[in-house]
Every structure is written in structure tokens, then in C-alpha cells.
Length: 131
Image (cartoon, rainbow, N blue to C red; front, top):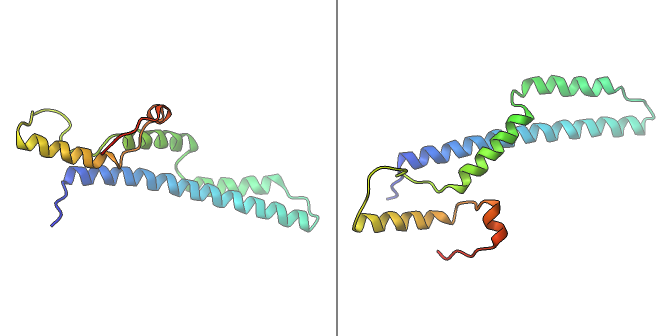
């Protein structure tokens, strides 16, 4: 049977929740852009002048529903990137573990490093890690 530590699961859920909010925001933005381009193309094909205020009103009305601002999304992306560079650990500080238990902890951490996103600085150096 698979045993999952609740603290690791909680951290993973937090990361997933942030990623979900980012994706939802980006989907709304993409939909708004596609609607605007559709209106513009339809107006051009019908040789009709499209009122810019109409496009702004549709953007604002759907923007009010979206409570997250683009500035917050940038901050959320930065926070998520920082979280993804850290391995999911149960022990963050405190007690020292020795002997057999220490080796098991090291093996667990090594097995999770493959799922961590390396920061940009490490990517530029092109270090190779062996797991």
C-alpha cells in the first residue's frame, strides 16, 4: 500500500491550487481575445466600423467577473515557480535523524528531486545531475 504524508499532500494541493487559478485566468484572457478578434474580423468582412467602446465594454463586463488582476497573476506565477524549485519534504527543520532513518530520508529526497523544476540560473550552467 502507498503511504502518503499529509504534509506533502497539503503542499502539493497548494501548488495545484495556484496553478489552477493561473490557468483559469489565462483561459478567460484567451477567450476574451478570441471574441474581440472575431468581432473585428466580422466587422471587417461586413464593411462595418466597429465601435471601440463596444469591445471595451465586453472586456470590462467579463473582467469584473474575473477577480484576479494580471499583476496578481504575475506574482502567483513567480510564487509557483519558487515553490516548484523546492522538493516536497516532510521535515523542514528541527530534529536530526541518524543511522538507518537518515539513509531512508536521503533516498526519499533524492527520488523526489527529479520532479523539481530547476531555477533559471542552474539551467544556464547546464549541470547534469545523476539520480
